[in-house]
Length: 572
Image 1 (spheres, rainbow, N blue to C red):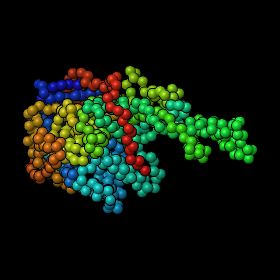
Image 2 (image 1 turned 135 degrees about the horizontal axis):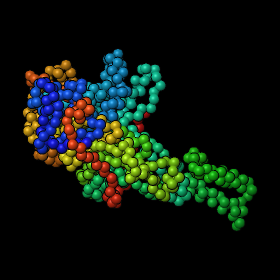
Image 3 (image 1 turned 180 degrees about the vertical axis):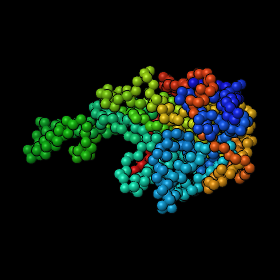
Image 4 (image 1 turned 90 degrees about the vertical axis):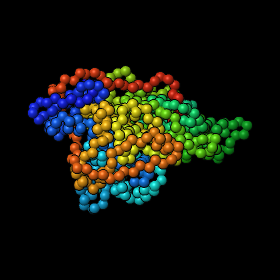
C-alpha cells in the first residue's frame, strides 16, 4: 500500500513516545506490502525521541557516506557505491565471509573482501554528519593490481567491477582452504545462466543448447542509431542472428563423402585396387561419423583434408536461462569505431530505462523443448501474461554514469537507499538527494544494476523531501564523535552538488577536481535503523494505492544492430 503526503507529523502515544504520520503535500512516503518503516532505536517500533523536531531532523537530514577520490579513482568509487546499494550482495558477503576477519587477524595481512565488506557496511549507514571514507587500504590490499588502480590514469568502471568479483572469489577459495574444507562453486548474486544455441541453417545440425554462467551482460550501442531503449537493446541481445561464412563440420564431411564416392565410382579412369582400399576405409569412417547427432571436433579434424571446407550460414541466439541472477548487471558498451577518423570514440546517444524491468520475454522457457532445437526458429521465451514470476522481475537499484569522451572523463553513481527508499547522486565525496526522475533521465549511462523484486529488502520509502527539509539536510552539522574510533573515517564539509557548468566542463574534456576539506563539530551523529511495520500500521491509518507498474518491451522493431555478447572475465 502507498501514501503520498507531505511534511512529517508525529503522533504522541505517551508522554515521551512518538509515532510517524504525515500531512500536507510535497514529501512522498510509500509503504508497500510487507515493508518495514524506519526504526529510530526502538525495538518495538515506537519512535522514542526527545521531541518532534528531533524526529524530523533524523528523518530528513541523514545521508549516506561518500568516498574520497584517491587520484582518478572515481571509476572505483562509482562501482563500490553501486554495489553497496544491493541488498543481496551485502547479505552474500555477511553470510560467506565473516570468518575471513579471523584469518586476517591471524596473518596480519589485509584481505580485500573483508575491507570491501566493511566499506559497504559503512557506506550504508545513514548519519546526520557528512561522512567520507577512503579506499586506499582496499586498493593496496589487492597486491600487484594496486599499481594499475593507483596509476592516476582514467580506468574503466566495468573492468573494476570484474576485479571486485575476482578478489571475492579468490578470498572465498582461501577461506575454505584455510578451513581444510572442499571448495564449493561460488555463486555470487551477479551470477546467472545464459542459454546459447548455434546451429547450421543448411543441414540443421545443432550442438545442443549450451548453458554458461555470466556475471554481467554487455550491450553494444551501434554507431548509426541516435536513441536507444534498454528494452530494445535486450531484444537485440536475445534475437536470432545469422552468422555468415562459418565452417560446418557435418556439411564439410558430407562434401568430402561425395568427393570420395565420385572418385571410387569414376568410369573413365577406374582406381587401382591398392588405392581403393584407403579411400573405402576413409569413406566408411566418414559415414560412421555422420551417423552421430553431433560431429566431434577431434574426429572431424582427423577425417578432413585441409582443402575441403564448407562455409555456410549459421544461426546464433543467446537468451537468459533459469535460474536468473539475483542482480542483473548491465554494461552499456559505448565504444564505436569512427570510419572517418580511424579512431574509437564514445557513442553519446541517450539510453532510456525504467525503474522496473520484467525479464520474462528474454528468458528461454524450456531448454529441453524440442521446438527450441530448430536453429531456423527463435527459442521460445517464458510465457507472458501468466502469473508474475518475481524471480524475473527486477527493480533498479543503482546507475553508473560517465561524463566525457572515450579516453577521459568522470564517473558518478546514482544509488537507491533500500532502507529508506531515497535516491542519491554520489560523485566521490559529494552526496546529494535526488528524485527518481532525475535518475531515469540521466545522460551518459554506463552501467545499470537491477535487483530481483523477490530478494530486495523492502522498507519505508522516503523518496523526496520538501524544500525546507532539503535545506535542513544541506545545512545540518553534527558531531563526529561516533566515527572517531573508525580509522577509515574522515569527516568532511557538507556535500555540494556539482554545477551544470562543472558537468559541461567534464563533457568537454576538462577534469572536474573535487576535494573534501576536514571539519569537526560538537553534536552527536545519529544512526537510523528500522521500525517494526506491524506496530506502525496499527497506530497510523495509511490509505492504500498501488504504485507498482510492470514494464513490458515494446513490439517495435529494435533500433540497434545485433549486439555482440561481451565475454566476461573467466573467474577460475
